[in-house]
Length: 540
Image (cartoon, rainbow, N blue to C red; front, side, top):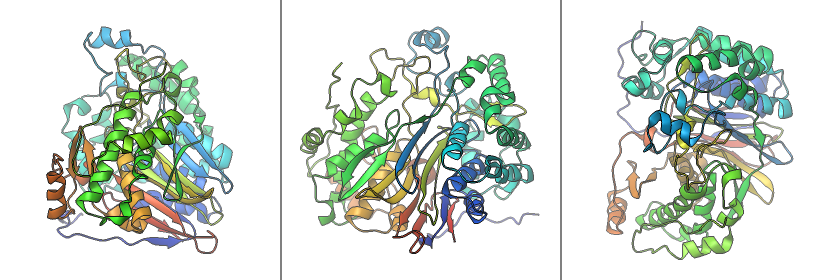
């Protein structure tokens, strides 16, 4: 019987970096241990990342599930690779499809329900990574997640808070299958209460036995399509069978002698690259690290980057601007000149066209490093769960627009604008750090802030992770607790409109970081895990 503890700590806590030659850092300890166990059994960092990702669909269902999308950047020991496993729109999705169903004044596909669901890509990412870079049998990688789903786990504090918040939203609880899967006692689980997910274990077993084929062209695919037909959706067996992830490489930008790599659009990683390209024109390190002056320059650079990204980023084949144009040195230098160190401003786009997430990282003693992210988008995503199979589906379709002038206009087979972005840092062509910060539009902002702390002020990865963050939010700025009163007043004096938020889990992101110290077989790595989540960095 669980003791009636108060699970909310009244005191600030401090984490320290984890040093090891093999390490996995995730937002749930069981997932980190699942991945590490695979390395101990002779697997590599890719095997570990897949095992951790599969486990995360069970232990953090408020952020991801078997119906998630995913992206990955990995160093295979010799070179860098990028994988885009974000889903495509069903063949039936046209602007007319949504306007007939939701009215001529509809601006986007809906936030919840089947008409927010694109083809899920995460399972395809697991298979693609295993096929190309894995060492152990695919079924071995899924086994820990099956065991956790069948035996259950005690629900941790932050996951439970998010779960409760979702259970209070009729737009989620009214979706087909959600309450049956995630309110087993007619409510969200309590902290420390055991949660089992036998239906998801069934699907994981089918995924393991068929190397993912059942999900896209077999039993699970048929169940997904049947559930869509029964509930007004348009996804078909053909949509699922046609899906393939894409190896896409990375886009990159130099900063302070290092190179930051992001996945190319349709993701928003280019926003971090643009902001850092703008900040390259300022001597940030000469300013006090937590001062208003230092934060002001970063905030303004982020606002400038978002102004272009929200206008132009979409499915690459639909973009009228290329990433190279958006990252052009001369263009970013011209944008940097718009920043006034003495006052906050509102910015428009500069270039005119010329025509709930989880992040984890793993590294091994042989030098492989994996930066992996998967997400259901807004908390529990669409809210739709396929009965009998435990497939909780993302709502990435809501990322499209119905604006006919936008590059991101919805269309059959297109990928929407995507928020989830893994990141990777190199120096002179060699790996330095795999990292990411989850949390909607906080992600490129988290990349910018944590990386700047490490490269401009030499803060270690855990300190950079622990430090307070700001968030640009529709032209206003949210500031996390931890900034000094003087810094906050300084931002106000510069003209920033500050809006406080108290929910760090929701509003300021959460990251995992692995920094290579030298020869991975000798010096190993330093790893960090964000205190804003339930996770840990684990290594040996």
